Image (cartoon, helix red, strand yellow):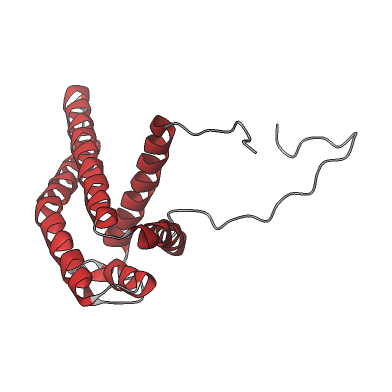
Length: 178
């Protein structure tokens, strides 16, 4: 029996981009606030929140898959690292601009636009990286990959944990939010 509820490819794409955006923001937050200045990101040392180790265990990757994932990760980091550093430099310039005696609105606008353009590029690269990882998985691992991504994003704070279902409202109850 068909329910009539269909999700278009465009809606899936938008949902995936939102998820990847949240993952990027969480990674940036972890990078900025959870490492010593000049130190590596927290997951580079293989800690509890190491995405590579988390996926490897969760997907039960074979040795060849682990090598392929490592190669994909290295390729991604080589292109994403300099872009992330450039965003950092633009943000530093924006902060410096905030404390000048007179604000240069044109410069502020230019810096913000520069950050936005680079963030968009960063999101596209991240999306392509995850698509490469998903495509490296056989069909049975792809479904597991999706649930692991949700779990990982919840673990790093990029997604709220699932909420218990609300009880149906009774007649006369006011809505919880207005």
